Length: 367
Image 1 (cartoon, rainbow, N blue to C red):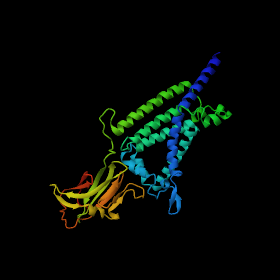
Image 2: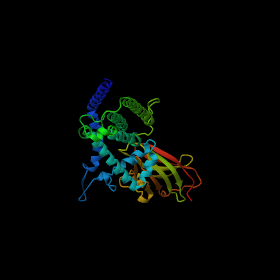
Image 3: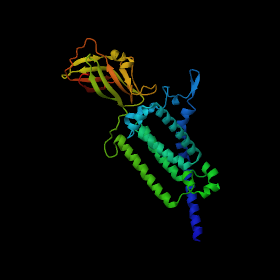
Image 4: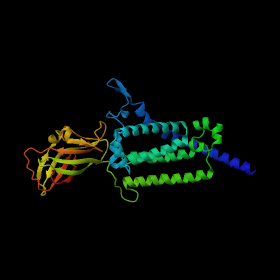
């Protein structure tokens, strides 16, 4: 009788799990299609002829549409992984390897979830991919916090699918569960689908719920500061900001400085249309108008990431611009007719087309 009761309970658990998996079928397919779509947009659907040769620009390192451009845009606001991203961006081979590894992972996870093949393994991988997306891109989204929303939703969806498995409408159930190999090796239930021990399932469900809630609240607070404090974005994704450092005055009057667009929407750029050198009294000691800035040569703007696809500072018709994530060492040539006494303190001011301005102290004259 006891054995019959145990079998009955086991069967009831299996039925309940199968019902949960059926309820989550749309969630499983949707999360899988998100990753499948991301991978296939690069591998299949964006192939077109360039100079008579069929290419996938999103996977072509030398193309302006190379997908790693998103990394330079995301770098300023990435959570706790800015160092590894910046290191990766300085090694082209590592960039290419990372892009391909991510693409293959998206493809495998997407297929696994949509088809219900190795469902729990795919759901676990999906969870970690969404965590990575949060750390890198979670701060971005100039209208609806879209990257943060996608990542927290993905973590919650992946957790639910991991608990439920693939259910009856999955390749796991159709081709793996009936095999003697699967029946002899209960660990396959953790990789594919199938019932898990009831006590383990209850604890796991509770802990994953705690993880999802904590992940949502902590990342929201870290990025937007709006859980226990007023809303204040860690990195502004509405307006561009340029951090200016290492400004120095050369004996001939040239000014060198490092510039980094460390905030703002990745869909646009900061446009600088004037630069001024102010003395200690606030008087203009030298200035460069939009025409002078537009005439900066390639040698005077040395971008940290000189790739065709990366965020860069570059001359425009009037002035110069810098996309979100652009970092460069810039030299302003000696202004014609200006006399700049080298033994004074100066402030460099950059003015943007929208009225914003950024400034930094200019150091001692360069030797």
